[in-house]
Length: 142
Length: 193
Image 1: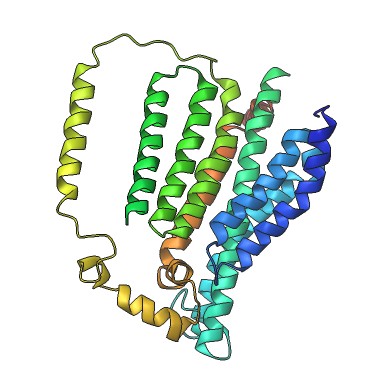
Image 2: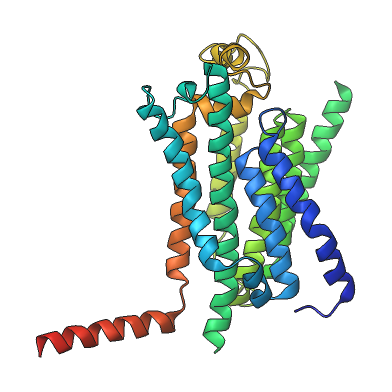
């Protein structure tokens, strides 16, 4: 845990806006620059900032590693699941047309879900990697 | 036109300066920070080419998260790189020859943004029209990434997932593994006995 009060207060103030910006990039990717990869990295950076300033224990209390690993796999499953849902609705793998009432709305829903899956996987991989790097060191020392 | 030239010349000069500084530095933390700065200048370069999505990715992934991960991994490295003494003439010569060939080849490339160049004649018109009519999304990059090239993005996601899992398995606490394997070995031995 960092003793500098400026760092701790700024981290607490910045945490929510960083995640909000990540969500904006995630769900506004259809209209402006952005998408799952960038948004995932931005959301992960908020959690990594928290872990850097407050330490690994508090970071794991905020975002437990079993949930982290679960969401890590869930992102890929959402992506694949959207593809398989298209197969069950009577079209090819990852053809989003049958997901909505019209092909266009189907495409909208499909792209939104797929980008969400990408963001989930990327952000959780980054958090898990950072935590693994940090805890590898402490595991070696003990 | 002239302002574009000035901006490009400035960015290339900064990139060259960072690259030369990277060659000279032997301290690990300076190397990491200079790589991050290089990525940031590369992101600016992508903005001048109107590739905003790529610039965004370069800034967030290249300059942001990879720097943090490098810094986290840096704790296991020695602080300074050992000076290697050797003949550097042949590597330098091959780099210069390769660079010269690449620059020579770049004169045959079509002008940036030229509509009649082959890359804009193949599938790009379909994507540009289809993104508006079939998909209804203003950002063509997203429609190509998530819909037209959905398979590729699926592969990318799985690559990120696999890489993350592999690193996690490699970096797992060694004590836990040895305990688990020990108990397994004990069980096996017990069964055999």
